Amino acid sequence: MENQTTEQPAQSEQPTVVQNNTEATAEVNTVLTNQEPVTETKETNFKDLIPESFKEEKSLENFNNMEDFVKSYLHAQKLVGADKIPVPNKHATDEDWNEVFKKLGAPSNPEDYKYNLKDQEMDTKQLSEFNQTAHRLGLLPKQAEGLIKFYNELNGNIASNQEDQAAEAQLATETELKKEYGPQFAKRLDQAKRLAVNSLGQDFLENTYLKDGSRLGDNLTVIKAFSDLADKLSEDPIIQGDGASYMTAKDIEKEITDLTQEGSPYWSKTHPNHQKSVDEVLKLREMLSNG
Image 1 (cartoon, rainbow, N blue to C red):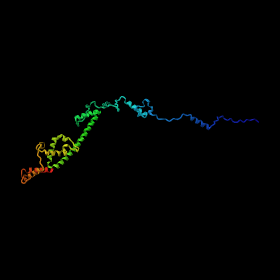
Image 2: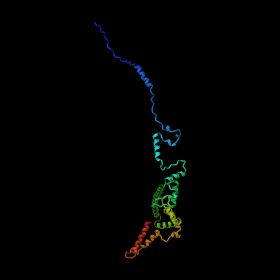
Image 3: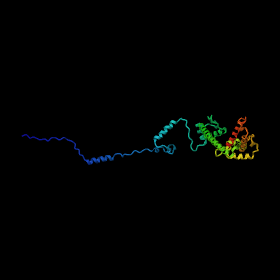
Image 4: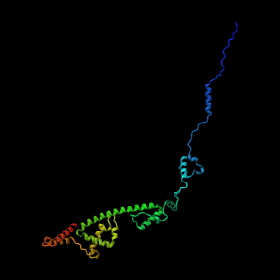
């Protein structure tokens, strides 16, 4: 019997991998431990970028970031070559400011101001004084003209209001004097004004305004004062004027009585002077009633 050798099948050689969880974990920890530390990104402070020798520059105080600084620089570059006017600081003199005003268009002399004021008139002396002030302040021609137009308009409004007040005061004065003087109103008013004009002058009486809005020549107290004085000076030629006669209420009543007496033309329609007498009586009665 043959000897048979039974060979066991060869096993394939494969590397034996030994997994040790503890060692693997330690190895990972070692790798992580050896990595560089992670740093957080910090925002750069613009002021830290400014060189030490420029840190005190006032013009850089308003910049907080590089973007604003770059924008400002680019804007400044665009202005290079343009006609620039530096603004004087608090230490500037009047001469410094005058140079600025001239560059802006202010005239060199006060006489060089020219205005388009066709519908408005100004006193030559006042205009000259205004030009002197405007030049000292460095006003531009348009600014000066604008101020003059405003001044004229303001004065026009004031004058208009003043005239309205004076007219109202005059009417009130006449009403009061008519009540007090009756038929003698016209006579006493005329005599008072004659004396006032001779004493104070027409211009002064018409152009002097009192606090109540009345003109001096229309003021009730002033007229009564001159009227009382005129009574005392009734024989004076100034008071008598051109000889115009004035009738008192008693004179008017007497005249009416004479015209309407029995047998007069007033009562006879066929008389040639009838209508004349009637008209005269009506006129006299109106004088009494208006007084």
